[in-house]
Length: 107
Length: 107
DNA sequence: TTGACATATTCCCATATAGGAATATATAAG
DNA sequence: CTTATATATTCCTATATGGGAATATGTCAA
Image 1 (cartoon, rainbow over the protein chains, first blue to last red):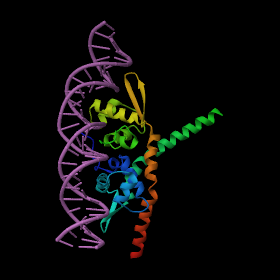
Image 2 (cartoon, protein in one colour):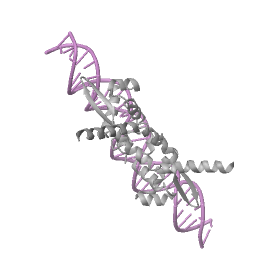
Image 3 (cartoon, each protein chain N blue to C red):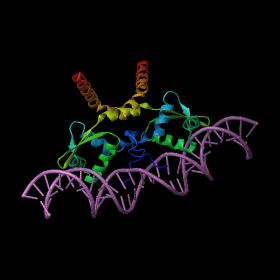
Image 4 (cartoon, protein in one colour):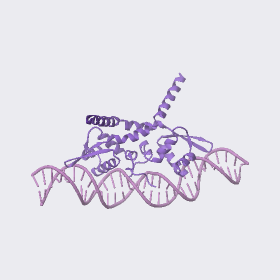
């Protein structure tokens, strides 16, 4: 069985570093495909394909403006991932507490 | 260029649903490979390979006990992912605020 | 030592990439 | 209509994968 599709969910979509970079770029304001390609120093077709993946999993919104297509983040979709990781927050906090307690004991 | 390796970072490692499942299983107490295989209804070799990936990116700790190998989560490594998603929290909160404001206006 | 059990590793293969090149589509400008 | 610009899509290929089967390794028991 091959790896799950990149478009199967947000987890798979953000596994690709360049897609994370794109999301960072379009977090504050919308950007055109060309601007993104310049920023990433990547070919336009590749960027279009990454954006398609992000669109498939609902991580971006797009808007047509003349011949440009402007993309912006749809951060809401990242909550799935954020919440999943959050389930384990008490574990790493617990670990920190343990480490601190250990340090205290040494004193 | 193929997809980035599953062992390149935590993002890629947790893209696989079964690996997320494994992490959930070993979040509270350590489990043997066999127990995990039973729980996931997956072959032992597959589980061993998933665990190897998780080990490579530092998402689990392991401990040898007789002929068993017990794995437990190393949640600390998930903070990378949690924090990255957290960067966008104000965006989805902002969106919620906007949605709420919109609902208020309608009333 | 021999056998039984638990886990890891190797070999295999069908599948899905990411990126580049070429091309198609859409929209604006002259 | 024709040309230029912006983006999307198609075709291609090298590569990494997840799972199963078979096998190797490691550890305890008799």
